[in-house]
Image 1 (cartoon, rainbow, N blue to C red):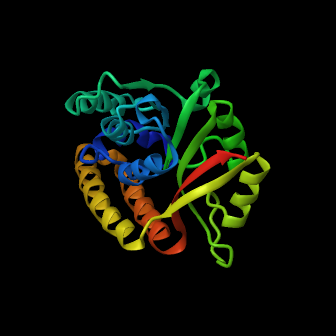
Image 2: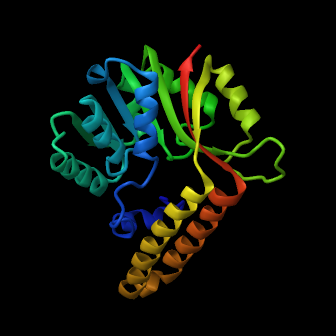
Image 3: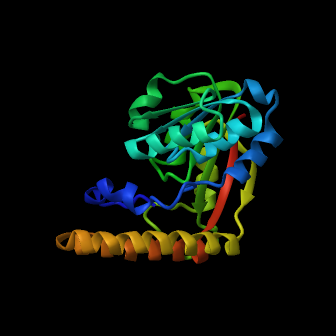
Length: 245
């Protein structure tokens, strides 16, 4: 959703202004938290790449737990703080503008760490889990919303790995998958269609405002359309729960 061209980053708040839930499904994550944790009100949740805070805010509302969200885009964090106030959980939610790769070093003792559709920010699964395991409580869990290529598939993507590779890296990190929710393809397509319509409209508005950067916005539209096709037809989208062995 955030694109790969850094020139686009200043425009993301405008492009994504119509969307609040821009990553993982809060509903799915709430269900997994309810299933795999206890003492809900005592939970400490770390939401990395939290976007506009939808997951953290809905978790705090549901479980009365404390959530700390980090994102690199100030406008997203501003909206997260405003939404926390609207939902009456501003006393439970804290949000910060930071680079999660730098901030993670000083963070410890979280019961749940969430990576909601943010991509390989820390590298592969082995690197990611090795880093994040230091931030977990003994029985803590990591919830990752991501996609993988089925083992028998011939499809190749530079950033998406086959399931067998991911499972091997998780095992080598000293952790294991204890649960996963596979996202229904029809649900993915319905969400993609709505999101794409909104971002395409905003990109077209930006083209009118900044005609000299027309190619930048047109490429973003093309890239998002291609990404949707990958999500809907080429890979398995899943929300995984990972715990130390």
